[in-house]
Amino acid sequence: MFRLRTLRHTCSFLVCACASLPGSSQNSAHQTAPELTEIKELAFQVPSNPALNVGIEKAFPPGVIYMMDSFTAKPRRLVIGDAPAISPDGKLIIYCERLGPGWGQIQIVQADGNNRKQLSHMKHEGACSPRWSPDGTKIAITGFSDNDHTIYSMDADGENVTSITPGNNPKWSPDGKHILLTRWVRGGDSALWIVNADGSDPKKVISINSDNEVNPTWFPDGQSIVLEQRLNDRSALYQVNVDGTNLHLFQANDHLDLFSPIFSPDGKFLVVDTISKPDSSRAILLIDLAGHQARPLAYGSHASVVWSKQ
Image (tube, rainbow, N blue to C red; front, side, top):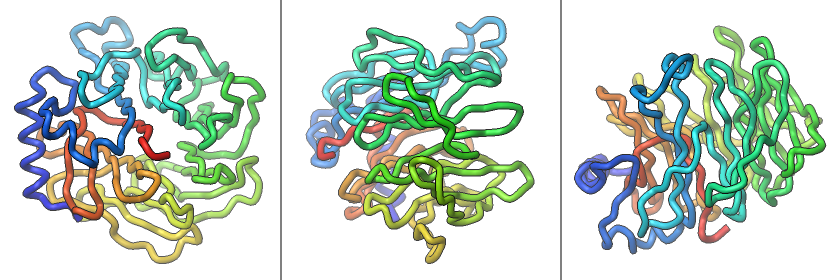
């Protein structure tokens, strides 16, 4: 577990160094820290300014996606949208375009903000949760229809859309052969499942003791999964084998809710969304799992990372 004292120090540093949010540390000593060199690019989402929203956007404010090309430059505003995902080569961003309470369609844009276009053309309530396959040739998304969630696969250019399986929030396995997903029913049997990339051979991993959607991810070896579970009225990270055995606590903090884990390919570092109480402020942290220390990267949520060593 990372040390609370270290976390408090780094978070207080972030507040001092980044008065103009969103952002990350501009201190040169922190820029050259070895763990920061592990990250090549970072995209994340922050809430839009309510004062600037009109009409239905005031009731359902969209997010604003920012991009960090390096830790020597300030984050730059990219597009209005939610849930960004950077392509493995770092050249493209896919994201959800919000339309009021609905999800709209998946959009794609270059990492420099140019050549934005609509990628999906889903009916009903649109789509979200876009994820690149490890080789960048496929994209998995969630389509929404009358409270039903279905995972689809498409080519990187939006062609060859194929229905895969009922579920939400798809995550490709490190080898690209399987997809991890959630099947979430309010008040019902919510669980994590694994299917082949074509949707065949579905296998239930574990039931979820959560009233909300969760954001599980694969451990880099592809043999286990890390997911959110409640611990003492907080969201903590647990690890479980892909066959549902050996569920155990992986990361927790007495003062932070932990969400949406992302591992470095070697499993040494973890990027995680956090919510602090009582002010419910959001920050994205980089945790050195070996050194048990945490460093803030930016204020915001829904991080997407391209690691220097893929």
